[in-house]
Length: 299
Image 1 (cartoon, helix red, strand yellow):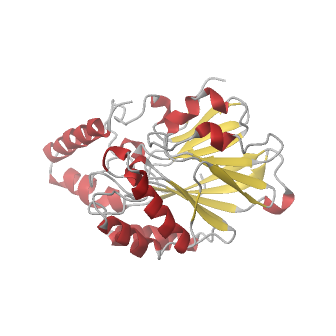
Image 2 (spheres, helix red, strand yellow):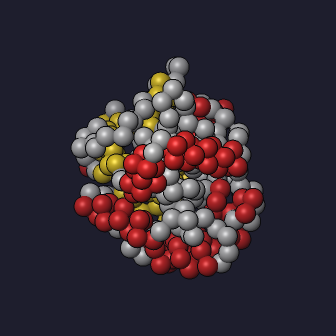
């Protein structure tokens, strides 16, 4: 089935392979455009929208979902980038919003920290102590920035995941976990040296309702997904952070159908790309940071 994407404009919702260097250049250009537009526009793009969370509510229909899970709430956040760029209090503000949502499951879809040195590991522990947990569980997968510079240091990600476990957050590393009849898969970032999509999907059964956590949405074009029936939750793109009229955001993915929001990949196979709550540059325009609330439903 041809991909159909839903774009989320920046409104309050009650219910509703370029390299990263390329994205940084885009954000710098966009920042220059915002400044040229005047002080008020720049003030909004730099001072307001980066911290103006949008809570997006969606139904998540799943095949074979048991009645005891219908109506449960799964909250997705992504790309926190804990470190020197994103202020801790910005993330804590998002956490306070999550607490009001009373989630049954909380998932983080990668780029938990923006690693530069070991101090980010300490900072991640401090920040994530404030994260509200889901009543059933709290899960995470790694993103490329969780593997350190050039995304190749497995030891950095291992240290982060050990800290997550101590905080009651379960990292899924090419593996799965069950909550009643619901299975959740999690793959290490596909740009990392340890991402193993084949091993992750070997835990999949067509008879079981399944959600997959995969940081980079480009991975869904891998033929390994062809029998998958469920939802794949991703991040990585930040929605482009800046969306200028008449231009599509520049993002570090090959498939530009996967910039943000919901994409139906096939019958009963869905992708959702969260716009992130963190950033690489503190600028957003028409791409507000996102907290996504899914209500589980029977397909």
